[in-house]
Image (spheres, rainbow, N blue to C red):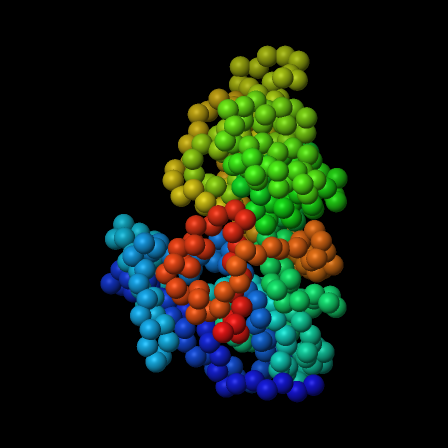
Length: 380
């Protein structure tokens, strides 16, 4: 099977200048010939995840974004507030490719049998630099998608599905009974609802509106608490009494929500306590922050005893902990269930050029629940 491929393909790059300016551009990157164990993938779809935005936009002020077009392609510039430049020190004046994951068709393959076996296959990749028309990776790094799965359906094979399975894996490793998840109406949240149902794990979902609550209940969620309701804390406590949940994953990061979860967990435990302990319940309660939808300080009042923890959680670290063999099993499960449990839904499909329009940047940078963008690098 032979494919015609150009010498170069478009690639989106992000540059933070020492002068305090972000620059986004499209460059013509060489496609090149693959090594013996390499494959060249014609990238058809790559999602914009919150984890991508940190590299793409850094700490830039999105309101200051301006675009200039020329024969060499579009360039977007935006100011970075001086207070945030110290955090950008490690990447100053480096033009970096962007995009954690994506999917496409293998159009070139190296001479090794493993690489040749993938020629013409539709594969998903977690390899970085995926906001590009072509991507060269090791054959062993590609996940072959089942027959009939399109690149758009398989583009989000890694970050959200493996995060959902990593949360369930953490529950098992740490010996908890049930899970709690915030910003739960997201693509990831919907996957977690389905995965927990399949695995027989009770899940308490925290959302921010009646519409989000209805969405989750429509796909089978049993415990959904709307933080906009006056009864939120009572609803949350009752859900914790019913499930015994003592492990939460918080996508918001800032604000009062992590503290409210710990408080409600303690209140639920106290409802079934048989004796008084002035140090509170002896059952450990854990909240992991894995996202930063709220970039403000994390606030809480310590009304939840002394057996509690608040920490960070990252998918990469979880996969390192469980090891390559277990990680491969999780990837294979995702591939099998990519049209069911781990199906992704996109509100917008945009080209690389459209991804550099200031109004589009402002829209996907909102990270709004239910408003997910997919880049199609070959879209006109």
